[in-house]
Image (tube, one colour):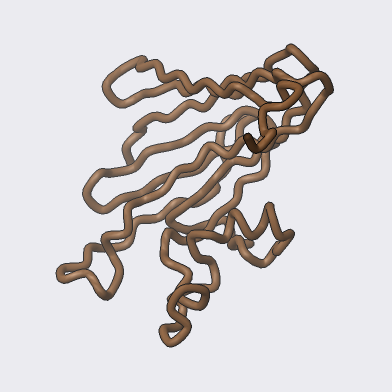
Amino acid sequence: DTGVMDENRYFDVFVEYAKASPEELLVRITAANRGPETAELHVLPTLWFRNTWASWIATPEEKPLLKRIDGPKGMRTIVAKHPTLGTYYLYCKGDVPLLFTENETNNARLFPEYPNASPWVKDGINDYLVHAQRSAVNPDRTGTKAAAHFQPHVAPGKTAAERRNHQDRGD
């Protein structure tokens, strides 16, 4: 027994998806604080492209792009541009920080004899949050992996919900 569930100090997290059309999704993330005290939670809905562009792939594809853009008022917006799949948008309600990196292996950590293709590797969001390495995410807010960083404080027995809207708007 690790004691990790002692005093019910945990969150139940529920993720729900709804489709308004074949190309439009709504995602709701609800976190319920089961503990006896108000607690902060880090919720990181993440969007990424599967790495099909790396030089070690037999037939690499053109690299896609995630980028922060100006969107509707009161929303943080990411445009996702893929050479085959097209253009999509992710809308995050509120003034939430958006963290960007590349969905590429951290060779410096795992295979030191091979240099990283970019200073922003796939574990950069973790390093930014857990180790306070602010340079681990791309300051230009572009990449192939991105996360919105929600930090709700949830009272005991209460819930917090975050909603994301994802839709295809074409070019």
